[in-house]
Length: 174
Image (cartoon, rainbow, N blue to C red; front, side, top):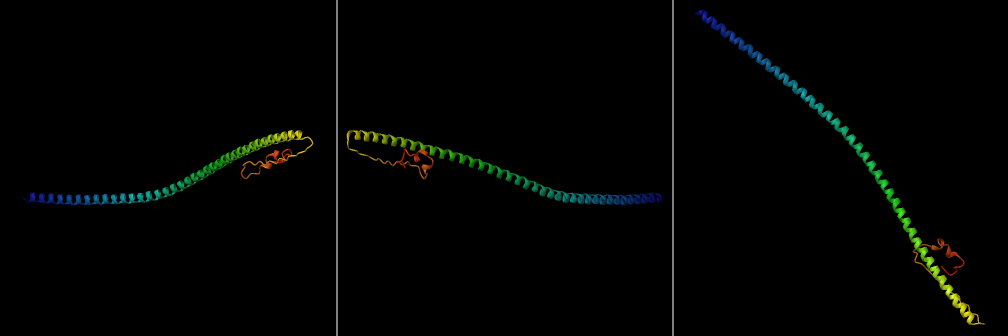
């Protein structure tokens, strides 16, 4: 029986040795897996750091680009605003000039109308005076008629703009 026991013991020793070796292999594999996991985590941490660093650089560059684009936009808006203001100013100037020209024409037309009226009145008075002179033969009557005609012309001095006002044939018009 001894041989059975010897075989049994030998088998037990082989089994124990196999268990021990399997335990070592499992421990070694577990350690390798842990080292691999730590390595992967280190690489991942480095990638995260690089990602944040590159992202920060990209954000800085993006901010520069955005600032530059906003500055260009602001400049374009200012130029457009200035052009619009210039166009508006020119239009207002043209309208103002046209209004002033129309007003001046109205005043000139009114002065001419009043001058014609005054001429008609003076002619009528001269005709009446002439009739009176012919009726009063031997008596000389001389009638001076002074007419003062004023147009509502605001603050403008129309004498300089209307040549008839300085004409010697209209001495009584002021």
